[in-house]
Length: 389
Image (cartoon, rainbow, N blue to C red; front, side, top):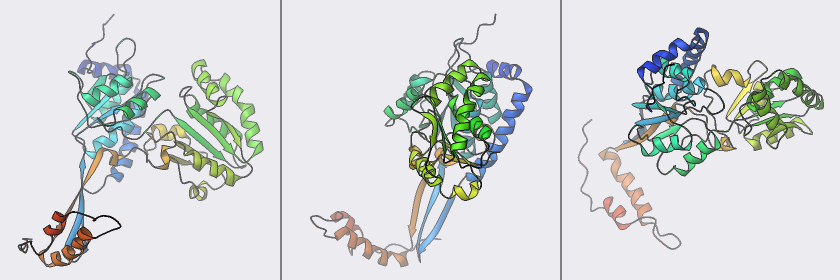
């Protein structure tokens, strides 16, 4: 029996072995997802630099620069997720992050999931480290002898991973708060209950800490979905069926019947789900009523499964009601903006006079600014030289 390399960093030999062990159709699926996800995120990428003349002689703008180092967390505890490699590493590559690394828990034999290595290599990430959980977050926050310190960490994880990110937020940027997974399937009476139950099961099988709700104004749909669940659980493997039963019969999942569709929408916006499916007569029209959700999937041919893997939009999404203020993972999360401004000599006097008023303003009990602020734009300042264009 071949003994796996026990070094923390995945070796070239492990990358090569991964391509031999992953089935060709899986590699093609990874490549299909990479192409779509890359196209979507390339369209997101902002201009490298822009400038606007806010007033004659006064220019202001932004420069967009990649963050120097980002760690992509790829979970492993309840499954293998090459799709998360795609979702976290591709936007980093599009953004131009100079050092992009992957941290992922190894299996009990010390090996990295082969699909994870295949996806990393196809995207162009060569640094994959065998560490996960809270200790993996700590490793990239502080750096170790073998794992590099990074400026930011992105990607979903267990409650322990999420907690570690929060605890270390003064050391490493924790990124979008993602995990555990959650979904709302929002329907009216038009949906086929068989579609509704299939889609309700998707996120419920992630783990017992997931959340999954069918929210509907239709008693017909609600009762049909409840009746169909045992039949579908019987056709799933026992591990995933057990997760789903725990979620859908517990405090964090199930079927909610509302008095009308307006109430169903109101509940959904208050819940601010990670994933939201709109299974209604006119989902495009109903999209305008949704204010809080990580992503919204429109219609019966757009199940969460597709967006989790291959559609293009990022599947690393805010959870725990964070969608009220946070956005999906994107190219912007791998970049920072640097503002700049320039004032022409002929525009200086007017701007300086207004700024001096702010600096010397006497409010209820104190000054707006400081004496040095005011003196720097007062008559004490020599006239600025003519700028070269």
